[in-house]
Length: 325
Ligand SMILES: [Zn+2]
Image 1: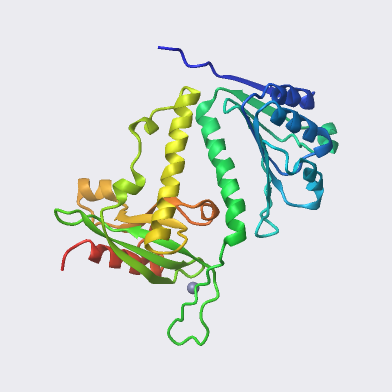
Image 2 (image 1 turned 30 degrees about the vertical axis):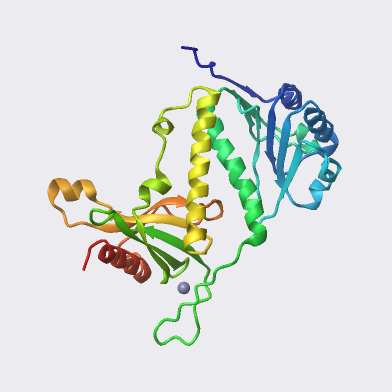
């Protein structure tokens, strides 16, 4: 068996620009740059040269006037530009990382905009750290997705009307899919989609379907995914598996429920060890299995019974649908 390529790491506090350029020039296959602001005078010629040599160059940056120099790379074969719009002024993209040939990662405080060279900065270079590189590749793809999604995103408004109140709730909401447990010999299960209010936890059932148990089909993982990826090929395989799982989930909800799903979860017993071991009464909650890129920083990992009337309603309704009448 071949020995996996050995990991190596470097950190630089001086001559950062030199080391960065050295790394970029070694690129052969692919370059993914995700940097808030870039000195295009300095880097555009490098990107162009790499593309001419056959590398696929993708660049994510903030869509703001400081990056207007990006226009000189527009339409060049092999180069794709992703100017990212941020939805709110206070959520500007601050990333500064790049991935070279899926084997080298550069990250750190170093600004790719020219005037920053004189400040105290650092750059960390990781070679063959495939576990870390895989996470950065996900972030890169997520941001590209975010860029596409931004243009089509609808702002979901809660609209719930509480008893006695005259005005419907104006808070934003998201679509939460709940996969019911499987029942009977045929593994039937109910899938529900709820509009869940971000601020007050109002919940409204908006779609429901009967399925053959979906949990395995939508979320099944490759056995290999649990193994630590030691080689570039293993990492790429595991990465592709994880990406296709995300697409599968989105596609299922848009096909069957005709909506853009934000998160998917299951109702489960949150105190399972105590419940099984000490017979403590079960405390139910919602565990989130999946979130889309835009929602992942907004929607928590877990919701607990008693958190809001809406969450309680989702839990109760799901538990009821898990059994035949
Ligand atoms: Zn609401």
